[in-house]
Length: 115
Length: 115
DNA sequence: TTATTATTTAACCAAAAGGTAATTTAACCT
DNA sequence: AGGTTAAATTACCTTTTGGTTAAATAATAA
Image (cartoon, rainbow over all chains, first blue to last red; front, side):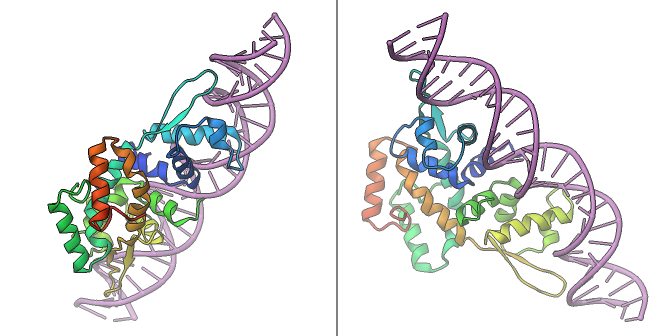
């Protein structure tokens, strides 16, 4: 029961149904019924997945008549990216890639230098 | 019980103890006892965490006398990074950042264009 | 061979995760 | 008011997770 934000984010992402929901939401807002449609799963199961995503701050809910549209909130993914930076140099030890990386930092690449 | 690699990786990362172990391993190989030292937890618990990390391919084990040194294997994190790219444009909608991102792709930044 | 050190395995437990069916709530439409 | 549609809640079940203690295994050292 880790309460830290990164753990909550990672465990929200550790499920293919939830990642598929996020992928769908990159196309725009959707209702719960729409989101549930591709899955062989009951609505309460989807509602639960949405709760997990909402708790992680990965989605936000709106209100329109009897619908509660869901939209993507990618901000927590920025933190994941920041965490990842500490390991980037271990992905591939080859020096030319490391060189690319160092150059990217100097050029002020939006992400390469974050940590 | 998701068997897909990304889910296995994300759930391995969804625990602060395991992330701390990975962070320690960026400094170099370590024995199980060394890894366990900072935590108020028994050895079997650490062994279990290591199993989770190993199953995700995030660490590999060696053999040296009665020690089984653990070392970082960051390759699965590259996949995480690849997955993240699909969401990068949502982290911050401001157009100047989007512009940075598009430029980074053109410059052949080692990561900006992967997906 | 016996003892010591490092680590894993086994058996167990409580809590959390992921699902279900059935019921309830909320808002719309006659 | 009554009916329909959208979604959430409740109660329940099974499996997984994260931890424990106690016992077993592996390699070194005396």
